[in-house]
Length: 229
Image 1: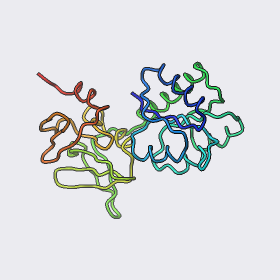
Image 2: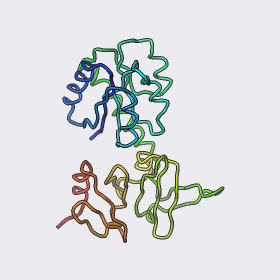
Image 3: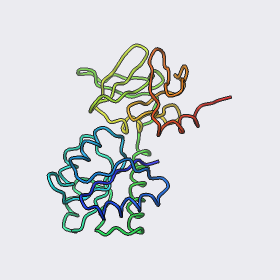
Image 4: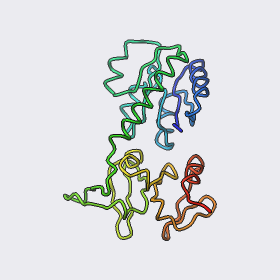
């Protein structure tokens, strides 16, 4: 399931994209914003994989929003003018749709996003260890020693039995580096090593003495991965 948001100051355009999103079963709409300032606040709080973004908006343009993001999701620009195309692709957007967006053109953009996400997964390093920077050294951390990973602003905290490492990364970046066979995202702010789970109590995972919340949108995937009797 790809979590997406719509950002456009034109009501008709927002409704059009919203209807197109609803026709794709693998897209989950988590936010609809009427300006880039509102979207900026949402994207700093919510876990969003894809944004359908207008360019010309008051206060902050779509391009300015892209520039401001530390954690950049996939972006599909949707605008009434073609002259932003070159600048848009300078910011590595997935696609560029000229309004009004039609269903067939929307699907082409969606397919490009899927291809980019799959490419990221294929290029991910899923070895038995990761290297993290500690002071001036790169320290090898066995993935088998990792208990959980926790979002921490523009960084993530990696926890083992004995240590905590602070790494400049996104949660999506950590997902790509950790084997999906052993690790699972259970909340927008948490990734856990499945074999380290001690118990689950309703909406809480227990690893050692740590209580980790289970996000509503991640619960079903967790339940599918558990070897329950």
